[in-house]
Length: 545
Image 1: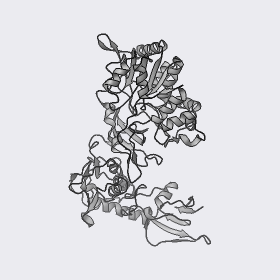
Image 2: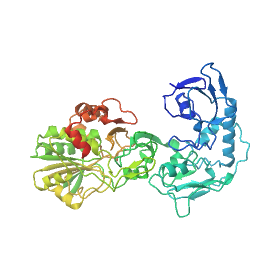
Image 3: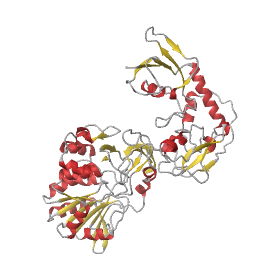
Image 4: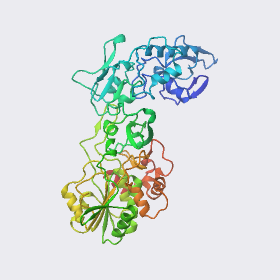
């Protein structure tokens, strides 16, 4: 196995593995500073911040011969016997000179810059820069340019070209380019071709110094006030790993979380900027019961008592599960329904789709299926049910009078049924609906329950590639609203607070499709197909439906 020596420490590299000096140094616990290099982009070695000393050890004699000049670590692929030295005075002097050169042209406008607190120029200056600044501090100019989806602060740019390479290699749109030459180089777009594509927000994350600013986040929060929770995007079936960043129970920013199995380092703009619905004033809050004079708010205790009594005394009740539920919510709800009434029916709500999958040159896919957990909910419904109805079959059964009481667990973000479908569901003599927003059905139901969004509770989703990922609660739901899991946890007679981890363990023990989720869930999730040597009929139906 090839061996690389990093600052005197031997690091083994797998045969055939292509790593540069930055990556192999990271395995040794050594950080090599860099601006232009990014593992998801091509290598240009332009910033020179990652300069190191490099040599070769003779395998016979053990003697080390070092190169006379420093080399950039980002474009130095490691090989057996390579010696990398990152902590000499020569390397430190080179890094300090790079920092000093960058600060000659970079304005010191940290008090107003959105990147303050997470800026690599700041961090590296204090860690690797000169002890004193020898150049004059220029007045703040902050030349701001609207380049389409984002703002470009021209003076702050250090010409790392990450953003330019991203639009060429990942989004494939090539809106950004470098104009002029030498010290007059700038990032720019053509006059009639602004930066506008579904992945454009990623260049803000890529920019190491705050030259590219997000219009949605600009001047809204200082980053040191934000707390972040690892979660999963709930807006399409790709299921990107994300960070939800909030302050005082309000989401301010969504950023991608690295997951090489799902989204690598990126997310789309739909997921990044689609969070305002979480705090929309039209959210359904609390519990409302329909009365002869209209609607009246009631408590959760009365609501749960009514749900239990209506289902227990029904002739043939039905529960409709939406693909926006977590696995734990769908499991608890379907299990409770089956236990409460032997003739109960489990149905599946409509699956929202918009156009076709959008595929980008870098491999990123925006799914046409605009829900996060169709596969998981279907697997649970088929695994627990003795016959599962699709949405249209469910409506036919209700219209024919063969279902008398209905619980609909919705949670849709966009309109999901029309007036005609709502009238059909209303033909049942009692209807309860849990949802996020008013719909043609919400004004007709007997019981209306306010739900939680994907940012407001814990649970798991199964994405389009059968990968189960865990989402954490980032903010609390609106006053009076609850997640569906809490409702059916209490209805099932379980004591204490709702524990979705415990529910997932039960689910993994009961349904083979979820068996890979029996243990701890890694940050990148688990592939549920890993234990599926002989899929059952139900799982096959779920995966192909």
